[in-house]
Amino acid sequence: MRWKFFAYTCVVLLIGITIGAYLFNDTRPRSFLAITSCAQSCFTGSELLGLLTSIGIQKVPAVIPVVKETDKVIAIKSPAPLARIDFLILPKKDIRDIGDVSSEDRAYIDESFLVMSELIRENHLTQYKVLSNGPGFQTTNYLHFHLLAE
Image (cartoon, rainbow, N blue to C red; front, side):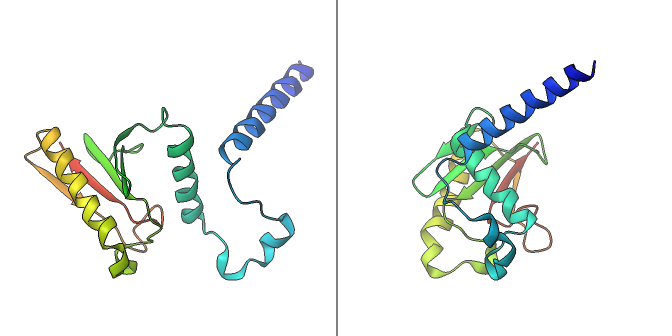
């Protein structure tokens, strides 16, 4: 019985390593020794979650279905919906929250609202709301909008 547990553990470990290698094959290598001295550049838990989500969307689109995509914005069905209809609209630029938006980000914000407008029309939504959280309320530290409807 013990050898079966050991065999299952080894198989799960190998599958995890294989999936991790596939997901992170395009990322910049980082020395394990440098992680403890990264000072200002270390990822927080929520930033790491945002990075992993971004990689998952790009590498495994079947897991998180892309609803609409432009060169500046991607819209997906929320993996953790807040309402019956919950689209996540994500600018393809690293913007932490609304407080970090600059004039250079205008095209990404404009495109986000255009995509939301298209989703509203395509899904015949008449009662909806748009939600975006700031620091302290975000699950992931990455600017995103929820288009919610019942």
